[in-house]
Length: 327
Image 1 (tube, rainbow, N blue to C red):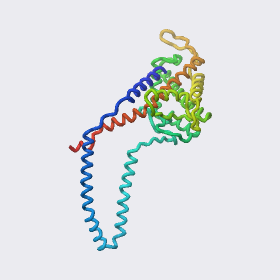
Image 2 (tube, helix red, strand yellow):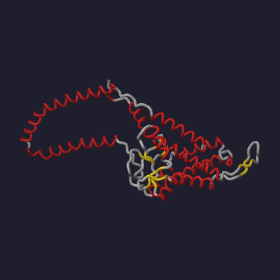
Image 3 (tube, one colour):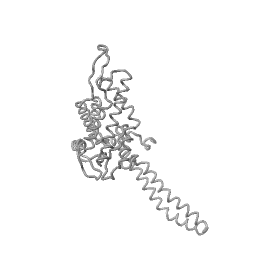
Image 4 (cartoon, one colour):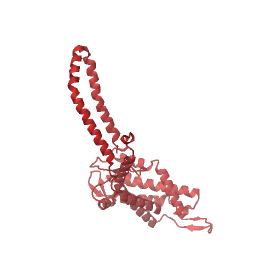
């Protein structure tokens, strides 16, 4: 787990540095083009207003000559009036970004555009509580997301390279065991902290981003969410789901499928004894590691929307404008 913790810490440093960057300066050419377009639009509008009386007179004369054509003309007018409305509606929908997840009251966000972040909400007030079914559904969507499987493969490879839990040995069989252990640890911890205990204790498993105050204030806010959460009633509570859920998950994983004492064969010792990982001290260590990783992850979640906006703004500023391409 040490490489995983180091990886998350590096991500945290990157996020904090990016959150303090200044926004990109505006393009003066774009501003001048906008003012030119506005002036041209004003000139055209003035010309249109001058021609309006002539058009009205022409329309009145044509209406006298063809009174039976009133119904078709009215139909065309309604169609033309509805077209701008449809156009505006379409542009609004295309420009907006939906934050609604597959479960009501959740998001469809992803950390670094990959890792599921469905239980994090930005600029959200008091929302209706999630039902027990919804809590289990959103946790299942995040836990068994396709991106998780290569992520577990990477973590298992790091564990193999470090020879953590040496009772597994080396080779592809050992790697398969480490992969299964990594997937099991993640699954059990996610469901205990995000679904089982929140359903039993009627607590809200979602993380509400602060977005208020400076970097230190927001960092402290994210860290304290390990111990403070919302109940389904909306009131602040001690985060029993995180503290006891992660402890229960550590106990289940340590005493069920993690390796016990055994003998392994090495090039120097064909019968080397390896002690059991199923101990109280190892359980406490796993529990502390999980709480620590969850704390760092909450800090990353707090600042990720800021980084996301900055990256999106940078991408938009790098796209050449259509007006510049014509010159």
